[in-house]
Structures are given as structure tokens and as C-alpha cells.
Length: 422
Image 1 (cartoon, rainbow, N blue to C red):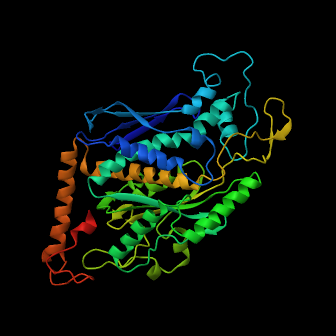
Image 2: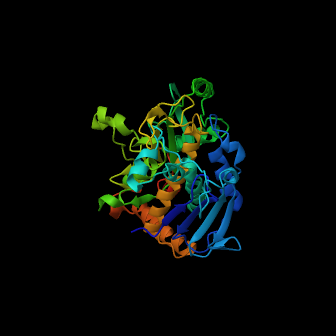
Image 3: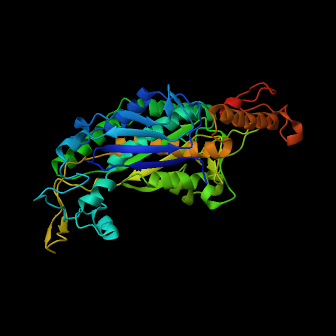
């Protein structure tokens, strides 16, 4: 069982959202502004609803931090819901006001009906409030903390959107022969996406995506899309091949599938690999242990292989529609239209940011499993020990790797590119 545990709590229109992070090492410096910056990134995006103009997500720290450094005890974060002011009566913790109406018509595509059946709710609001994607603000805050831990080891995370409805853009190029050029390409796309209202690095595709969102809004509809998340400078050996529940790719798949609206997840080439011969799928290993491609997406046999981790996720359209679909009133049994609540037309750019947070969760859990978490100093000692073993592997002839065999970039024979295994 991993030493990292994360628990979120709170309803969409309740007083606020909380997240407890247990298992952080002592001695990690936390930048509050960086947490707030990640929360603000999640709120942005063309096609977001009016609520994102109301909320100004900011984090409060309730435990686990002293003078800006973690104590090793559970870290508790809280994000207030400004929109609670207009829903206070409906979300009161103790009593229902006389005449308060219940929500009895489920929305197709939402957890309203499934949640009500599971928990025997008479008021569908009980299901909708917790199933709401508002909960991902708490995950984003947790991810912002974990990214700061990963940054201590040089790991960086980014994302971009490659499709909204029928408008598409190029994804990360996994076929570039030189590993450093591949990584630079990932960094460039993620950087350009930060300047886009739909998190797309391609300007022509961005314009087409905006048009698709505008059309959906005019028609009272919604649209989904696809985003890619990447983590680079990831070390060898995260995850595990001995047991199914230790596999890094399995953990990534579960984490990204847990994002509301996500219906499929791929790593590296993903489904495209099924239509190719093995010679066009597997990544050739160079003498310095780099690869001529990254079709595996940085994971082989459930274990990280030193290449960037690449995850692609497809998100369905938002279930709340301006022109609602047919449904049924569970109280009367009558056929009716689904309710219309304030909602986004498209949330794919926001989901990409949440994907970054989930990437951070999975990688941090794997880091802690590999290097411990009593203190940041102890983690770094474990990390350095593995890096030294890789250096020995690259330089010692007894391990089968010849010192006189230069790498593809012509580095000196006795100077392996250890930065690639950070």
C-alpha cells in the first residue's frame, strides 16, 4: 500500500471543498501562490460557464504546514465556494426550510439517476452535488502541492488540447529520433498551450475549436474533446511489474478515467499500436539507454523507462444541455425534459489541467513507494542512490555497457547523459 493518500470532501454548492494529503515528506517548502495559480488555470477556458466568473478559487491551509514547510503530518487544504451564498438554504447541513423543492428529474449522461438508485436518494441534488466536476478543484490543489515535490527532482508536467468536437490539432510527436528533441517538442507545445483559451498550441486549430464551441452554445448543446498530458525528466523504475496493482500504466489509466467526463485513456501510441507490427511499435534502445522513439509513452511492463510519460484522454460532452434531452420525473413517473442548470458548454481545457494534477498524484505515489517519505532529505538520498547505480551501469564494462561506445549525440565516451534519468 502506498504511503500517499488523498481524500477530498465537499459538495459543489456547499461551503467549500477540502482535501487531505497524507504521506508528504517533512521539510518540503510549499508556495501558496503556485497552488492558487494552478486553481486559476483550472477555471479558465473558452466555453466555461458563468460560475467560473463568480468563483475566485484560493487555498487555505488548515494543517500540516509550519512556516511554509511540511511537517510530515496530514496537510489539509480548503477552498471556499463563493456560490454557496445563493444556495445556502438548499445546502444547509441541519434542516430543510419549509417549501424547499427537490430535484426529481435526472439528466442523461450525469450521475443523477445512478447515484440516486445506489444511495436511495429522494432528492437528486444529493447525487449531483458530489458527482459534480467542482470536486476537481480540490484535486487540482493537491496536485499543485505534489508538483512542488516532484520539481525537487526535476520532474515537470504539462498538457495541451488536441481536439474539441470536430476540430483537431497535432499531438506530441513520439517518433522524433533524438530524445532531447522529443522532450523539447513536448515542452514547446505545453508552453504554447498556456497562451491559448482552449489550451491548443496550434492557432488555426484553436480558431476552429472556438467555432465548434460557439455553434454548440447557439444550439443549446455541448462538446467534448481530447487532451494530452506529459511528464518529463521522470526517472527509471517508477511503478512495478511484480503485481497488477503496482503497474504505473494501470495507475495512470485509473487516475485519468476518474476525471469526470473522461471515457477513454491511452498511453503512448495507445490504440494505434494494435494496427502496427512490433517493429513499428517498440522503441529501439541506444547504448546510453535512451530511445529512438517514445511510442511506449514512457512506460514498459508497468515501469517508467526514463522517457517522458505521455497520456491521452478523451472527454465526452457536458451532460447539462441548454436544449435538454428527454427524461422522466422520478416522483410522478411522467415523461419530461431534463433540468437545465448553469453549466459549461465545453470543459476540455479545464480537464487537461486536472489531468496534470492526476499525473502528479500518480507519479508522487510512485516516487514515495520507491524512495520513502519520512523527509525530503531522505527521499533525495534514495533518489541519488538509484541515479548512482545507473551511472555505474553506464560506465562499468562488467555490466555489459561498453565505455568506448559513444551515444547518438556524440557525447564523450566517459560522460553519460545522466540528466535524462532525473
